[in-house]
Length: 251
Image (tube, rainbow, N blue to C red; front, side, top):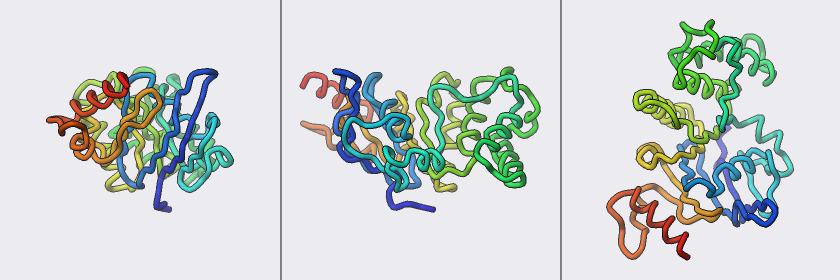
């Protein structure tokens, strides 16, 4: 089911003691796009994802994901979303097929539906012929492909990806980016992506948000963000990003 808004937050705030990790974030993410959530380390990106998945509760403010309130209905949110965060979530002594079988059973997928979906995802990732191999022997790029298949196994409408191309070689990273574009354009999946690769974000993302020290600095298409930088539009998106962050740091 396609929702009119994939993510909507209103003054979403999270404090850890005296540290404000996220400061009154108001944001709307349209469905079926790759959305880039960008900022330096410590900007509140991972905290935001954890809030949107209902893994932690906000100090104040609200968030709805696929129409569900993340504070009151976290299980409904997680049932309909996928996530690839800091760890792949793969069991390295198991084969690729066994990993997906395990997660499919956890998701209570039917036997027929689970097996068909596993084959579909492994074939799409060019991993079907290696489905019986223990994934501990695989390259980082292959593991990352399998981890995305794990996140997509239960047909989620939205997936969260936290630095998914970090550590991948250029060829693997390029192939991974093409997979993300296909997910959004052909499968209608909303992709919420954090990355430090600004060139990657500019190419991939239909919309981006720039955050620093928990505060939202700008949101829109990459070109719009570049043009809105004051006092004059900058030449590149990376220049605009750096200008916004530096301006925020000196405020």
